[in-house]
Image: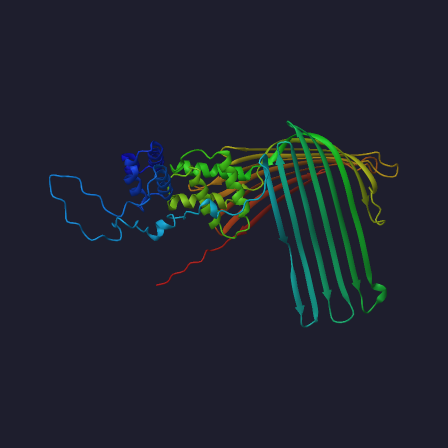
Length: 506
């Protein structure tokens, strides 16, 4: 009872409170009632006291009639009128901040969002929607009385689930580039390029070895219309269509997973440990619950709900000791907002497959490959997260060889590989400072034309991104390339600078 009443280190006090309920001695009831009525005690501790009282069969509030004072050598004091905080019949009312659970509120598990349905044996999963826009403009020239419009937009949907015995993934994308020029008169110019693509993969694993089936489809429509109102003979209209449909079967070994969400969990644990607020390690069940909650909240513009629900889950699991103060809350928020935790590969994967496809190409200009195409496809991937997830080493490779080509078509082959190293830097409180990246690519191909022309290309890039503040950043990159004897050197500097609002009011 003395430990439960006076111990300020929450985990020790909580153990004592639970112990009083387990022992079953009704003499502990006043102590537990006092803890429940104390607004300074942690919300979780008060809830444990209520459960312990229920085991004792006692009420959460002390009885309405005060008990007689124990005999003492001095006469008892005169009874004073009960106040709002000392009434034996009314539990003290918590201050507003305490009623909401302190700095971040309580947000019990019942208030958490509905979690996505992911199989219990899932090793990793992701779902991404990307919308991007390039140049887009709409203008009207009042002098020439001409309307101009152009747009470049792209959309991409990706989903993948990796389970113990099987894995599957799909990617669907669309890219539209269009333009329209309409001056006064009969002349008008229109142009459109539409790209549609979709691919899917299904794997069945036996240990680290797997069988794989893949399907891919793509189409491109190009339309150009240039009508010369003053000269019909100078009018151009052209529509071209290309299409690909391919399937492949093969086998492979290993797998590469995107472990960015797992790194976010590990960073949470490190932040709590550094602040001496880690009650116990984050187990697999709690990590899964955190990641699915973040998935469910991915559409929120604000990080508020993600922060509050994260703290609630960590409290409920016994990972977080007490209420996080302002400093720890800031560090947790930095972890949740860290954009350097996306597309973080880990593992090794190599695959060999035989593909059968059909390619439709325009008659002009003549295509090197069209109609039925068989090919041998090879791919490899590697990723590792090192040095407390601040260093990433990754690489990819591919190979392609056409088989059984007709006499009038070539049998090209191509191989290539890319290696990349990234170093991420953070401040003392988890603020992203920047990233240093180094990448190199080697490509060799043979188009089987003009006595087997072989081409090679070697490129490299060294870049650094520096976050100046929350609204500003700099990226400087150097590029070097060699393409069949020609040397290319280049540099790129991009800068974004912003000032957060400065305001004052009296």
